[in-house]
Figure 1: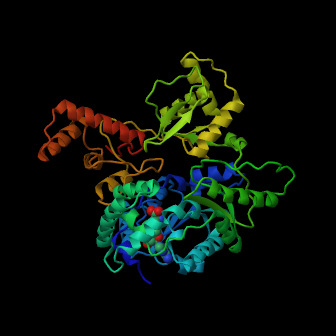
Figure 2: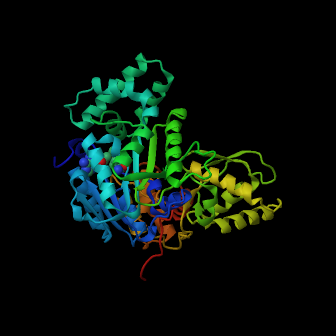
Figure 3: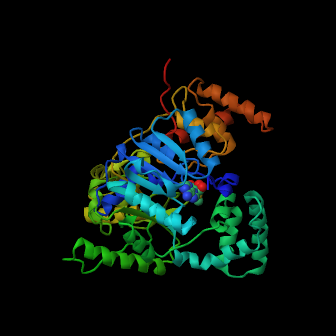
Length: 505
Ligand SMILES: C[S@@+](CC[C@H](N)C(=O)[O-])C[C@H]1O[C@@H](n2cnc3c(N)ncnc32)[C@H](O)[C@@H]1O
């Protein structure tokens, strides 16, 4: 096979995946007592990388890394190669080819990413993927492998079956997708199971590529954690931990005195039990070679060696005096409950520093400072603080990293977007990615604004161009309104790390 027609016809929405950031992966590994290689100079391999919407921004941010993507769909691989060429990025390439036929001399990688691939390929390619990990991971390297989990997927199978049976496999992918939308309408009228109806409602708003490649894909083979772990064993690999947000954490009782291997066995059984208890649908597993040191369930103690970043806000006034639970929202609209006043203060400090990250000690003292500034007692009970931090990190309200750092660049007099953001904004089909590797939800006006920030225009000149362009599309707005909107949007770009200092005079 020299290409994949379905992905050529209907390319996957190739997005940045925050959980694949090298410093995040290294941080999660450390929570599990596993020391991964230095993320700033990692060799990174992404299998089934589509057009590189994840890999290219990683290479851009980690300029000393060396990144290789492998993609079987010729159209997607070519789109990625063209984008890299236009960006002139030297540390990333996308190879058009089959992950099951990689050359032995490809070398060793500190990070191997396979997102949305394992469950969606034939069994032979699934085995080949694990083989690639065993053959090409460096001794302490980590692989990120996401997969659909049988426990949660079981209830969705009737929907997949109905969509497959009632659409024509011989149609080109975009047409079959349109047919599938009509089938969803029929199923909404015929079915009464609230769980399936909720999924149908979601699928009607989902991107065409998700509906098609998840529900109409030739292969979609959900697997239990136990079976996944057994397949790792058979390929000389071992589970390190979970890179996805966790709703519950495995705690092993009476684990004192167990060897790391003995503990790993107990842990594996407990993870398998969680699949059923929580009807888990999707996992993002971190995996290492079986000759690397054995990992363990996550430990709050390990937080002391990490840094954290967060983009959270609250719609309510924050109560730093009492332990009343309050919800903090991230830009995707997910809510994270926080009760401990010191943790509320820490979230405030992190949000002010975003996209920068604060190390554990700096975060503790920033929280204490915020409490003092607001007249609340500045003494922080460190054990309670660490427990609250642990919960938020496991939920991905706060993201851990192995290095602290700051990014902020203010819009300045002549705002200038970095070369990646400019190229993404000006290329249809590419999503703009923020400094913390999040997909930015920009409307066409926002993209246009970002795409003109080449450092040559003043903020007033930018607002005038925006006003004229909006007028051309029939939207007449006063200059002050456009200036205000432009100003707000520029600060949003700055907060997401999209701006840079203009180069040259
Ligand atoms: C569901 S998409 C996920 C894309 C991307 N990893 C992401 O998460 O956005 C699966 C990708 O794997 C690619 N793929 C499938 N089989 C492959 C193979 N044998 N070798 C290389 N790529 C493959 C597909 O073409 C497609 O781009």
